[in-house]
Image 1 (cartoon, rainbow, N blue to C red):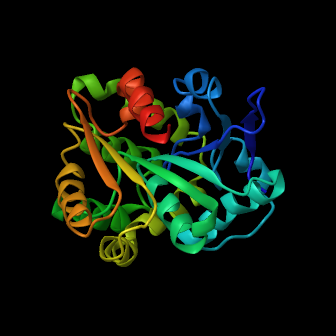
Image 2 (spheres, rainbow, N blue to C red; image 1 turned 45 degrees about the vertical axis):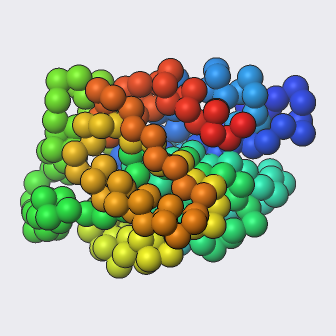
Length: 262
């Protein structure tokens, strides 16, 4: 089972909020959310396969390849273990795809979704980046690739803290683990296409930075289409902010998410 940590409210009947980090991160990226959220909700943090403290939990198991469905089932296993019937979900970057998979495969387990720095389409530049990574992943140290990706996604000096945080966490991955996740991300387009075609029925907030140049344009288009289809979808854009909105603008992030969840 994945490593997890809970912060239970004194009123155990409060709603649950489950936080899902992105590839190369860990549950530690939510350190600026814990205080505000545990005052109102029961909070669940998980470390995904190979990340954080889940690395030692799963090291003896042989997973030649990963799928997003497999990873979403890992999260459901934790919910089952804790007897959490339903939760709100908050994700960042690749973690938002896992939340979408949970909403598709286990819709009754989801209340509301907050998708921060959401990825719904890879633009031409990001596809080239993935192809480059596939070509040289066996000959270039993975941390150099990760630093390159982090810099391209978060290029400005004000994004330095987010870059450094993710690179620091990524250094804790094994080389084989990085390759598994990289292959998963490189083959993501069919799944993203499916997510674009099927708008979720759950109330959803997309929370993006206005400097998230690689992913914001496609999210704007998706939200417009979903709203035209009368879905319960909102987009909030945080100014002077890049991809990792919960780290760069934690106060605004927390306020907007708590206001949405209610």
